[in-house]
Amino acid sequence: MALPDYLEDTSKDFAKQLTATTSVPIDTTKFTGRQFVGGEDPLQTQAIGIAQQGVGSYQPFLTAAQQAGVSGATTLGTAATALGGAQPNITAAQGLAPTTGAQATAQAQDFMSPFQQQVIDTTLAEFDRNRAMQEQQIRDQQAQLGVLGAGRAGVQLAEYGSGADRERALLQAGLLQQGFGQGQQAAQQALANQLGLAGAQQQFSGALQGLAGQQFGQAGFQTGLSNFLQSSRAGDIQALGGLGSLRQGITQAQLTADQQAAQAAAFEPQQRLQQYGAGLGQVAGFGAQAPQLPTEAANPLDKALGTALGVGGLYAKIFAKPQVVIR
View 1 (spheres, rainbow, N blue to C red):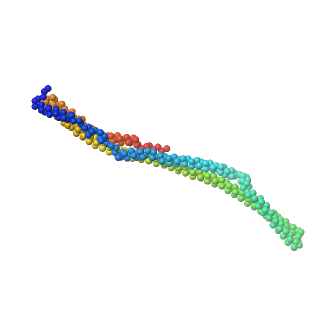
View 2 (tube, rainbow, N blue to C red):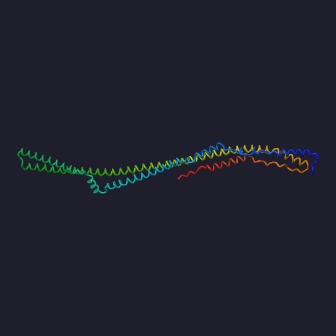
View 3 (cartoon, helix red, strand yellow):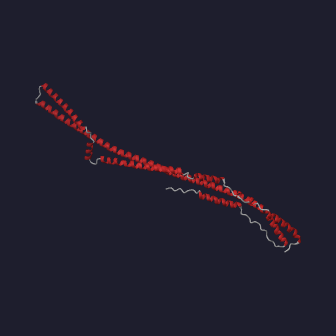
């Protein structure tokens, strides 16, 4: 179909413009390349740094917890040994505790001083010597009075002898009673000593058990501190990573908008020429063909926010707070 005469010059002009426009290469570097990719946000860099610093940071706390646990186990073993050492003393104390009067008497005799009989013999010997001296004095007095050998003089000596015998018996009984009492006291003291030693060992064992409990508690505290450190660090990383991702998304939206503007500017002459040709075709009667315009680009801010939320979710998964299990 031939063009009308009045459109020949216009069509020639269109052809010249089309040739000139399409012969010039489009500089795609103005709207493509890494310059339109948002870089790492400082908050993201900080989050990554904290994450790297936190790798293995829990180890000193776990080491301290392990050492405290080992010390607690050692102390607990020492406490068990001390508690076992109290048993022989308890057994010995049970053997020292009499259950009958005969046992108490025999036990007191066992604890009597081995020198008690020597004391008794010496004391009685001294008593007998004094008695003999007193009897001799009575005889001397009777001789001076001239009644020595008389009936009344014999009665006097007999009465003195009877009294001396009673005194000697009382003296001997007192000495024996004194020795027996001392033996009882010694037996009771031995029983008290055994019980006291057993009690001291039990008390020492209890103190060690308390110390072991404190050491185990310190181990739990160190473990809890390690968990708290990890949990807090994960929270910081997640917060910084999420905020950094949001800011990175905003930056990416701005870069994407700049990219779309540069792309639109690069293709603007062709689009204008395309519209020109479409209009020319309509005037020539070739039909009302709509110009092929570029499709509408997605909102860069929506895309960037979606990216930010996606990256933020990734941070949340990587640096999620660990679950602290209390046993």
